[in-house]
Length: 182
Ligand code: HEC
Image 1 (cartoon, rainbow, N blue to C red):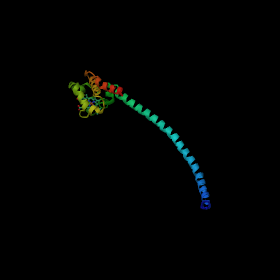
Image 2: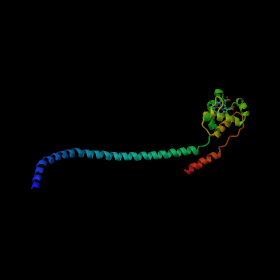
Image 3: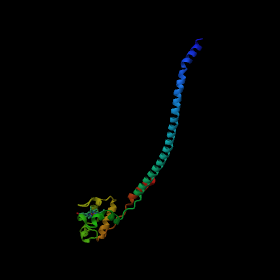
């Protein structure tokens, strides 16, 4: 007996509650559903475009990295050693073409003769380490034998008969082996 009464009482009491709840639920659904739809559309779109952008970028990045590494290896292992003329034109001509700051002028036998007389080793030493107004390697960044070729190129142009130094085989071999191992 108390049960039906309780239920009835509960129902009459609860009667306004469901309707209020329904209104709130309606509002939530009316406002929330479009928000949900828009939100999920936005996140779907984001995921779609974001995914595309990421995959495109990583592809580019991967290609870029492969290219960079490949180019670096090419530069390191297969760079042609510079000839004396190339070294001269790249670095030494600045001072030696016109005889700037006291440099013996290119092709000036009189200026070079006393220097040539000191021998190739002494001239190479000066060129590698620098002398007075000339910085080490004339300010360049070459292999030592390339600087040597530059010295020979200039000295021979002024009457010397030095032999052009060859590229050391031992220096190239480990580099080639290392790049093959990779
Ligand atoms: C910044 C200017 C400058 C540049 C660049 C330069 N030289 Fe010189 N070079 C000099 C001057 C100055 C002297 C004379 C040094 C002295 O005897 O006082 C000289 C002297 C020399 C001599 C004679 C050294 C001796 O013992 O008498 C050689 C060899 C030489 N240079 C080679 C080179 C080579 C090779 C290069 C390029 C890789 C080069 N120089 C680049 C300024 C330069």
